[in-house]
Length: 301
Image (cartoon, rainbow, N blue to C red; front, side, top):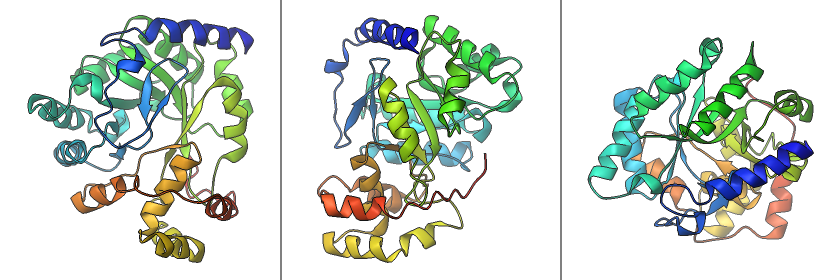
């Protein structure tokens, strides 16, 4: 691990000056706060998830989200909508809403491509049509995932990918297995993460390596959202701030140090999820929400 940290520091120094200048020169034309990854790049802490959206829907939701101030978009090869995501981003770029450097795109290598991950990287690059991938993840544990991680490292060295990470790895031993022979430390671990499953112990462990946890299913996912929104503590906090339960939960994610990617194709929900930067949860409210952790996951991938 010490070797990985040293390498990450060297890589950070190299990548901080890539493309449009150092990370200090990244223009934040949105209200969304950024976190500096251990790769040296800045990543927005709130983004749009596109799981279950087809190419046409993804194009529209991505374009709408960018107009509303989103600067992080999450997709995956498995979703089958990378080309739609790319079209939505290029549309916003062509209209002068953003530049390529102002948008952060995440995608993932799916298990069906673990036998040939280098080709999978190229396939995602071609489908997105955005020149490079800001963050690419292993979608979940599976056969040859250590080999897949090495392919991601090759993608960084080839300039195809800027930052790399893993998804659905929930324990320090999972993390250590992937990184034991790695040259680049992961920048992000993307996991199911919500008020009933908070990844708190993993977050503490990963912090020593500068690794950030990113939350998928921040509202618990389909079939569980209303249960979370109906939590009495969340409802009381929402009422005190004049906000919705969704906005309270997203604000908690960010104040707790998580990146979060709520999924939606509904323009009003996309707008609602962005409207969380005009208030702050108190220390007591953060403590109350921390106390809701049940270590209860809704999915098992």
